[in-house]
Image 1 (cartoon, helix red, strand yellow):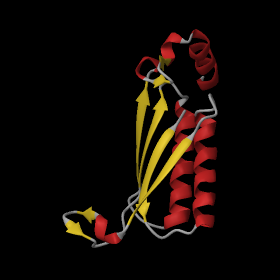
Image 2: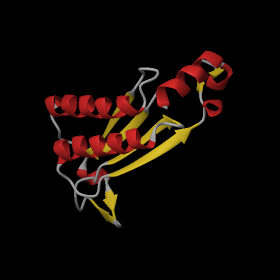
Image 3: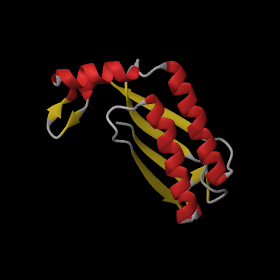
Image 4: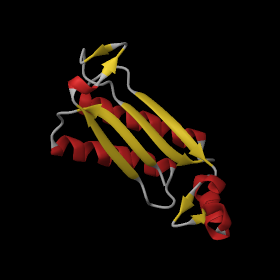
Length: 132
């Protein structure tokens, strides 16, 4: 269930973006295999819409990835995932200072189609088995 938002400078072509999201999916799927519902939203920023250190348009946006994930994934799997995400974004954009923020959520704070995930005992058990 990883849902991520990658903020990047505008300009990458479709082929590069396809390779990027495939590599990002592969990295996240190892750490979060259940359920297979990984979403990545690319948000591209033109130079005149980015301020870094108080300077508008001074340099391309430094990539930032914010991803919402379930709690309790294996720490070694998360480390491999983060290395894979970093490599994928570095390959696509060759920019410094790539930041990743993991927002971990318990199943009692996630609602899908109107239902709290923690109320689905099978979901709770399946996730526990998949993430350990």
